[in-house]
Image (cartoon, rainbow, N blue to C red):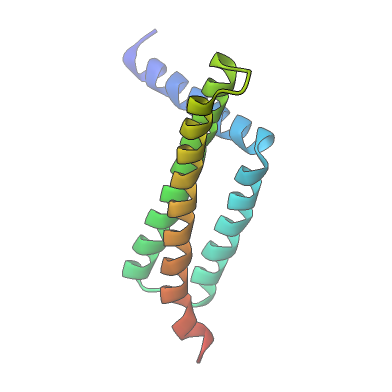
Length: 119
């Protein structure tokens, strides 16, 4: 298999991972709906490029945080199926990272969209 075929195969694995994430995780579907709503609103209000950049960055931040959180939770559940306080700490901190990303995304969305909604 040549280099290009290997890269294409790697993209296939990544896409399969995204699909598996969407199928198995309720929070992923919530993020997908929120993403569609935000992108639709951005199109509706014809946002300038700088605001699109901000939205895309925070959308990506939330998705990446949620995907890493899911991976961390799955790894920890696999390694330690029984309750352990250190595992709980790890999972709580990972979930906290998602919350931080989501709050930053919400604040960014409010800063961008509230002026359009008040017109």
